[in-house]
Image (cartoon, rainbow, N blue to C red):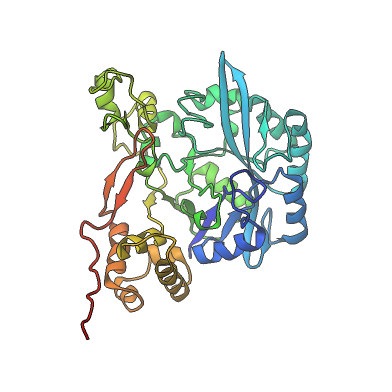
Length: 408
């Protein structure tokens, strides 16, 4: 059995989010993707919380259900405040075991920011003080710093973050349930910091539109209620927590260091040797996420700490199909193949992780099947992003064959 959880998403009440992020579409998409447990997102927004209370049905301790999909009460908050003579901007994912505790937290936090302006509210409050409030409400609330390496709005962000969990959370550092790798990092990047060994790493989609659900997720061996999930994360239980599903962080537009105008793309170690100065124009380089990891790391690349949760890098099925066909992701041909595969094999994660090649080829083309297998085996060409340029993941070196025109 596989129990897939995506704990961090947003809804139509968040800014820059699809209007389709409603409960009906979330449940429908979760089934197609293969997600068993989905975060509700935006739990601090009063209108969304009211809708959830009306439509969700209890399905175990701290778990709710809608249309056959399990939900957990979740939301992301943004803390912007000054500490240590610097402006800090930190995003935190919170999970609640029941509506009562979510409502108590929302009520307490209304004094520090608007709860209706955005599904991800902004509070002018120190994270340490907010954690104290959370613990006063209930020690059962889960606290997960979000996408911890993004340059802005994250725990270790180069522009407004901290150098350690303790520096951010103070005396409440031991109350942090897990750390979210985010799209900009993967487990090997985080394993280079010994200070993170005490925390389990989780991955979530941070989806703002339905098709982004489960682009990152967590895979468990069995169904878990709220308290079992919390215990599994806190104990880093490898028998229950099987692996995380990871985006390739190289695709991010600030992974490596460089200068776009000078066509200079550098690994952090190379740019550090150059004093972070562009070898072409002599101006400071734009440093990326990997550079920030390099600054804080006390271990070499490739180090794997004892007890680390495994991970698997995946490419979304629609992107595999699109490259195999040599067309855009939004085209009818891609959608048709996607629907055929997910309908035949129940969901997208089954297709990406489990289905044998021979079975795939009975349903789709050999090239699409080959693409799925290559992604599983990590046989990809990866060009990291830098200085605002997105990275690229190529599955095939050769272009797809064009159908020949018949004269008759």
